[in-house]
Image 1: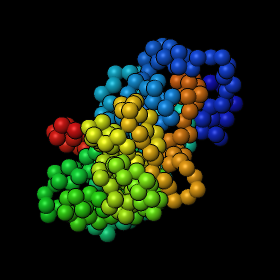
Image 2 (image 1 turned 90 degrees about the vertical axis):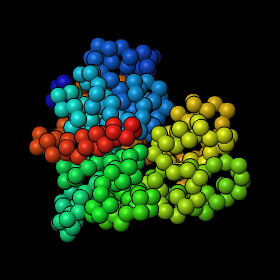
Image 3 (image 1 turned 90 degrees about the horizontal axis):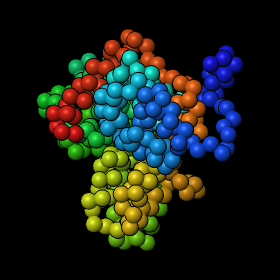
Length: 332
Ligand code: 13P
Ligand code: SF4
């Protein structure tokens, strides 16, 4: 890699190289995966082409489990930065690549570690549970990490009198507090994609589709969750769409999950829940920074790479491993 390309990468966060338009990117990526002993892990929020080329597609928990056990030399993480960091923390000896380094997360950004450290100091007798959607530095300040699949069970695994700080997502935290009956101290963070759904527009949509089930991710606001027939992680929502007999579903989460829902249920209809603005979509601008072209260049050039400082790896690994142990014990 020459210095010009590296400088360019640093500026843009991703490699920009002209790609022969006649190239079959699917075939090329498959070839490169074999050549480099690389695995592509993709979150459900990635664009359909990326989901289709991935070796594993899943939610945040499934992706961490997969990153911890893979034997590949290179993990190409088609997701966002905190997910690639988690993979690096769990498999520090492997090369972890992210097609676009600017694939961040509004929720992770809503909790700067220096402010969280001060917040934590106010509650010295509290245990800290952090949602995986946060920086590696924040995980290093935590006792246990959780995802939306296991947050309720992780809180329930602790003694009833254990005082708990939950961050950074206040909506997920409030939902977990309600489900477990625990009084959690919440950090005031949120995801821009899940906070945008309009209760009013969803009500109108439900009137037009009276037989549709309304399903929502727990990162949505309480007022939206109150309307839901089912609340769950992306994997939970996908399973519900398969197991429930309804033929129509209004889906309040990032639109990428609809690709897997439609593949699993070709005869059912999935309607993205309407947001609060004139935009008809509910795409995560960070997740959607990754494209098939960037994925191809990333695997071909072995860049951009995600690294985590060694001391953070040591401290952040414990709370993530604790989550994986509890989840394994519960069969999650
Ligand atoms: P899950 O993968 O746990 O469903 O969470 C969704 C999400 O917001 C990831 O950024
Ligand atoms: Fe972050 Fe929200 Fe995008 Fe998930 S959907 S990566 S929480 S901004």
